[in-house]
Structure formats: structure tokens, C-alpha cells
View 1 (tube, each protein chain N blue to C red):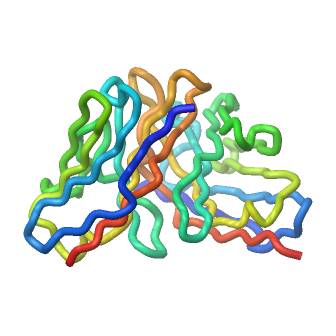
View 2: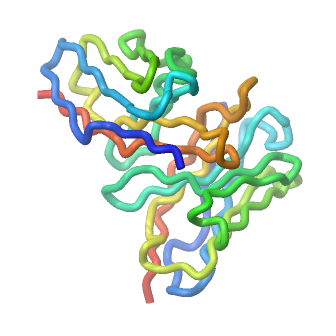
Length: 123
Length: 109
């Protein structure tokens, strides 16, 4: 059974960089059959996709966040990470990591999710 | 960018059928996925590729997609189905961007 677990600081100061890591267990992040994504959800609001990474290191980002986001992968640790720079209060949210399938026509659905971690941006 | 439109809320009595719609321009040409999210929990995939169910999801959950509307249908609704539901597609026209609908709160009366 694949499991994903987010980790990182729960409090980040404005203008600083938010850093989170997702550890994957029960399967190899290098399998090549999946993308690995970050998704966030402000309190009481909907889901917002941040971006994804493939095992090769290739990435896609949400255009609305692209200038501030970096997603990287460490296959030796079976982890992938998120960095979001110049954060403001608007970046306060629950951050999820998720596994995204690869379909014939392109990206598929998110079949496994981490439990989510709340990151608050405040001084 | 591609936009998915869901009704903010749907209410249904136990045992009845709930239909949650997801509107988008020519959405019938895309694969639509549906997620259930209960308070304080991560989303759970309930329907993928328009109408397929992951292992462990009851047959009461079904999906369809045609034209400009995709629909998640929940038959014989139970109290435990009360949750937020999100539709999702990927937009091939913009760097494989993932798009979520705004979500629908299903209330079981």
C-alpha cells in the first residue's frame, strides 16, 4: 500500500521560503509510471494544484505560482520536495502531496494523497 | 485558462439519488476525475476517467461525461456520503495544467 507523508515547518514568516518534503513509502518514486504533485487548500476553500515532477526531474507548474515554485525529487530517499518563495498570508493553507497516474493521453487522476500539513504564514 | 463550474451545494434525502454536475467548455472531450473530501481529511478518488471506480469505492458512485457537462451520481445516498466533492481535469492546452472545480457540498437531509 502506497503511503505519502508531508513534513516541514508549520509556521513560516512573510517573505520567507516555505519548504516541504513528501516521503513516499510502499512503492518506488522512480517507477516511472507516475507524476508526483503538490496541491494546497486554504481553510474553507477549494483545491489548488501547485505543480508536479516526474522521476526524470521534469516539472510542470501552475502558471499563477510558477515564478515562486520549485519542485525537486530525491530518488535515493524516495522523496520529493516543494519550495515556495516570498510567501504571504495568502499562502496559508493545508498542503498535500499526491501521486498522479500517467494515462495514455496524458496525466491521470490523483490516486494516493498524503494526510496534508497546515502551513501558516505569519510573523 | 480552463474553468470547471460546480454548484456550491446539493441536498438529498437518504436513499435518494444525488447528482453533482461539473461544467466546462467541451468537457466531454476530456477525462474527468471526482474526489470526495470529508472534514479534516484528504480527498479520496471516487471516480476516474469519467466513469471508472477505484477499488473499494461502492458501486453507488458512478460518473458520466458528455458535451459541456460531467456528472457524478450517487445512488441510494447514505449519511456517510455527506462531504465536499471536487471534479478535476488536466488542460492539455496549457502545460498540462491540473484544474479543479470549486467543489460541491453534499448535504444529506
